[in-house]
Length: 458
Ligand SMILES: Cc1cc2nc3c(=O)[nH]c(=O)nc-3n(C[C@H](O)[C@H](O)[C@H](O)COP(=O)(O)OP(=O)(O)OC[C@H]3O[C@@H](n4cnc5c(N)ncnc54)[C@H](O)[C@@H]3O)c2cc1C
Image (cartoon, rainbow, N blue to C red; front, side, top):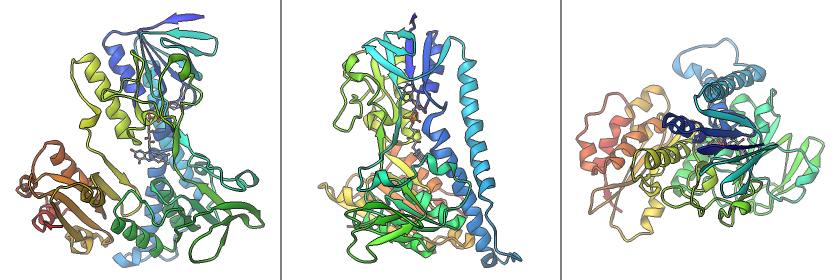
């Protein structure tokens, strides 16, 4: 069967559904195709369930520390992992149902369930239906990489998706990959009671961050009893009576770790390999990401790629911003650009890391004269009052233009407080403008002007 639409959207992740809303609102007949779960990664196996679990882990952590606050519990807290899981499942299910209900009730939107595959630059097949449209939007997201480690086929392993199915706490979780996703799972499982070892191939954790951020994060995790093995240059897997033996060719420490479970958290790859992109002539890069221009257009006129699959962002807010750019340019006559986006994100360990703009390391690679200031959270009143003084905040600015180039807030409330800096950067304001703001007391944000006052040539 052949059907014609004004637009086809492939994927009901973070950009597709909102785009369907705008396009149908503008009077277009839209086909939206989803092959699996409405809401995509963030809703089902990413942000939402993980942050729900992180909240449970935080509750467990606070309960264990309750005496620090003068709150005496008569027995140590006990984790009911089935209930913890049920809570995360409910949050994800409610969000997924919300997205699906919204789309199915959307006027002029035809929802199709199945895998979409291009047959021509303007035609996509979904099962026995051939859909065509002058505009096609690809929002297919990505999935966990399963690296070709020696022995990978001989042992069971977990990914960010399958680990969410656990309703028992692993005895010993070995996390392969010491970056954003791996560290969130490592800390939460430790707080649920698992023994946890993080194995990282590189010389330090979260290598995209400044070394002092990596080392502060390592201190936080090790302080909770997580073992960290960096420089694990040759990781191997083999069956073991306790579960899985992970060979780690590290410069120091035992050459092998026996874990009950292994989580692979070594990165993600785009879902572009089975899309038939060659039939449409859509170009991808060496890693399979769809090549897009500053307005998210692909190499084929009439086809756009939004979200993780274009490799220009790896977050829900970047996928959503892709939608905003495309919708504004197509429907509102705007000229919004991807390159206007200031990178910002958070790492949701506890305390969280809020990040915006350049790292100090990246800023130093340019020829700018820099100003840098840093303040430990032990000197932030709000952190002291909350009894959460780990971490620090750091700001990097351009000495000549007085523009803030980047910042990191690793500390309680860091994921929220960073927005004060992000907003000023987006407004194009200089750092003295932020110094004149009168922030609320007592907050973490109120110390940002003080940090700016400490900026020194670096
Ligand atoms: C464990 C984890 C934690 C995360 N935490 C955060 C966080 O805290 N904050 C944050 O900003 N980001 C987080 N992310 C990243 C975030 O989930 C993604 O960046 C975001 O979901 C990307 O949205 P998207 O729309 O590009 O793709 P997705 O959300 O992946 O959606 C793509 C959709 O396309 C569908 N699809 C794929 N191929 C086809 C096809 N051929 N036909 C039809 N449908 C298809 C898929 O089934 C899927 O539903 C996390 C990710 C993970 C894995």
